[in-house]
Image 1 (tube, helix red, strand yellow):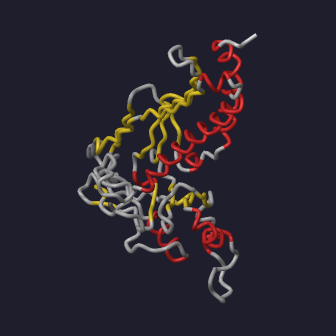
Image 2 (spheres, rainbow, N blue to C red):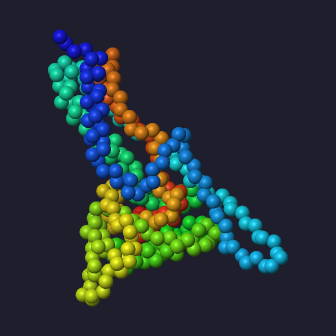
Image 3 (cartoon, rainbow, N blue to C red):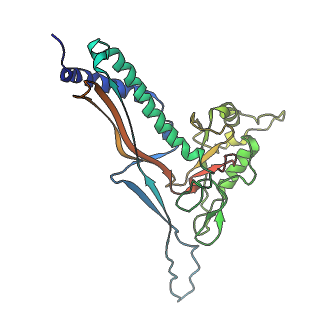
Length: 305
């Protein structure tokens, strides 16, 4: 007896959903090394950044307490995107008993495509971190030297002189990070916690982070970066970074790089009456972005346009 289209859909759905899930999860979630993931129940999310207070003054005997007021400095917005893709198995392929083989192959390809898009979109926040037309809530690119302060000044989260990854540039980056100030100009003793690099820098990073002695020198000096534990979470390679000589240091400043999940990935399968095809789709909604640019530091090698 010939199998009907509705029966075929019922037969295929559990297996295809399971196959999709296995294939989708097989791809490394490299964005998880960079972003804090939160859920959302709206079309977009907004995070209002506050200035905090200035330095507390000395109170003279009998004098009143000085009051300060925190003000809103800027608002970061995360607008969710819908990512979806589908494939169809033709009625003729079903008639020729090709659906099992085609469905498995197409399902794997669909999972790979959905996973790839997510990683590309996550990495693009860093790839475009110095593009002057791609700005955050403070009106500046993610990495730059003119982030405004509530006091009227600015702060920088980029090396003053662009440099390749080496001992000197990494040490200077950590020194600059330690000098970060808040919106009111107060020192916040920030530390670098993890380095994000393209695949081209993984061997350089391994030597810099783990060699007991300094690299590229005959002196018997210790590797201060490693011995002091200056980047406690080590480094992570991101295969979707496009600039081969740029590196990024994530800091311990909260409310930085965020990934909002509006709708987790879902799959659906149905038969089409008009064409006789069986269609399978995947869909999810999410956004990637940043709030406080103090969450990251760059070496200044990225393109600005």
